[in-house]
Length: 285
Image (cartoon, rainbow, N blue to C red; front, side, top):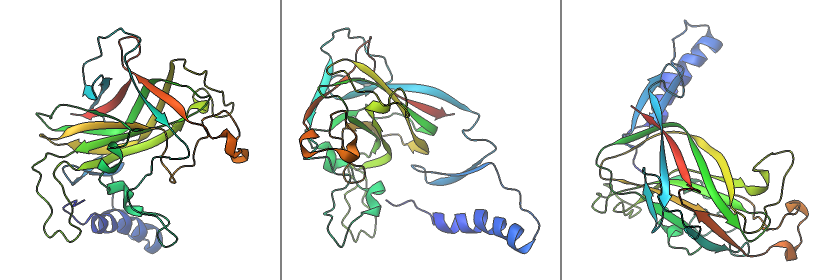
């Protein structure tokens, strides 16, 4: 990704240097804001006197049938309105398209890697908005509220928020890595939640097989602008390997799990008036 500026230089000169000058060299203090934030999308620095910023409002984006995302709530009351996939812990969804071996144990560039490699898998759900007709800036935490079920007794839910670039997006110049930016799926935020901790991290509970259950968790804070002409995408899956350990999808102590504990499970995500799965953003005005 081309962020169009030397973010490291700005950070060192405007944030680190004044801090170290004061506390290591006893130089006069340079007042710093409560938060310096680099806004991706527009690729510019901002300062805020509080974080999250004051001028934000919450906005929900809902999952809909046919892989759609919309700011309108679903109006379908059918109990069969869901999407499903089979999660196989023996064939987990990888976190990167790069081949990992003894020399490349960890791909640190996965955070800016095009997510199209996972959207083609049958065990990854994908929901996409219409083309945005104006810029949309989100700031602060991202809240996930899913209505789901599983045929097992435990499972993981990985949610990724993605910025989809227009098909006619120009490639960077120079382009030594032969990056294709047309239709690029930029990972804005992603995180994982283990179902058995849905009510308490101290007292894990098994999932009741095939029972619709609400799963709520937060993604890390962000400041990002989805530019006009782009689209918002949500991807949902049940593994992100080996960034996170595999869930056997049975209610066991994973650290002591046997091979026989690792089982396939059918995961369902619902999107109805009664079960409106959604992602909540803080919109910066």
